[in-house]
Length: 93
Image (cartoon, rainbow, N blue to C red):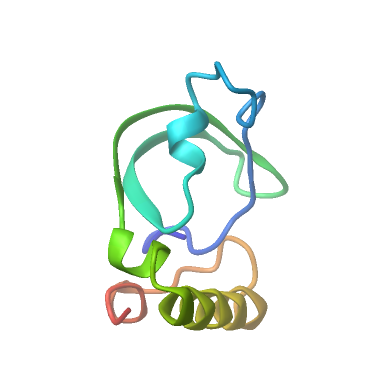
């Protein structure tokens, strides 16, 4: 989810393998700097990442995790792929 490009689906090749260099980029409730190849329709591909930070207070809190998943699912269903969300919505969480 980005302010400029909205919500889009990423394909992470080999991202779940134990020795993958992209494994840290697949952490739930994380944000960072990512290098993504996209043609602004369909699937995009994650190529690399630089810095990834995890929101641990949400990740380890069971109730907070459930609420965050629910809100992100609502946003995912409310907006089409590659529709800009705007900085107000993105930073209101």
